[in-house]
Image (cartoon, rainbow, N blue to C red):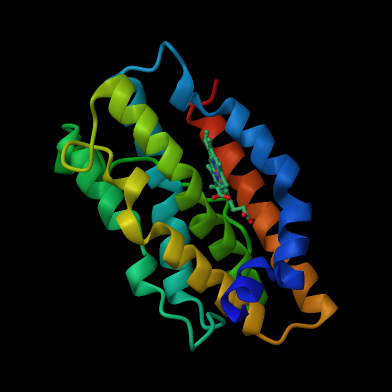
Length: 204
Ligand code: HEM
């Protein structure tokens, strides 16, 4: 009974996040080329290079931030190394990796609430990754060992890790102002990411 109650409980901050980002998610999802008939391995590599250009500076900013919540363990959730290995597997040389364009217009990370908003987007993206992983395996024959590990970065632990993150958000005391700051950071993360992908010319 308790387990059931835990499953259905949606913390207020998550309700706000979902309401505040649903449209942004749908808009971005529509423009990403994962399901495009014209997507080939080179196009996928270019897309993942663009992802790298966003995740790399954003993860670094979270790691450097002195407002990052002290009780949250970020390191096992960093995904940039996996992206780097994928790009390497798809033939991006060390030189190419070094010189990839890096996004400069990142969401502002000036509070713990902002960190959590950014994390919501980066962690939530692993859920859709499960669908994308299957699509890219079928379409391009790319898997964890030859360029698509990022899409399944948490593997069988994806669901558990998401629930752990939601539990963390749910037990963290937050007033309405903080909740609003979490949502603003999540919205900005979506919009910065979309703008960046657009600039890298990888969207449909
Ligand atoms: C074509 C690309 C994408 C597809 C098909 C997709 C699909 C999905 C699906 C099906 C879910 C819900 C999974 C579940 O409830 O178990 C989900 C959740 C989510 N996705 Fe995506 N997604 C895509 C891209 C992205 C991207 C690029 C981001 C952010 C960078 C993102 C962020 C999120 C977030 C934050 C959630 C959690 C929503 C919540 O339950 O609160 N998604 N996605």
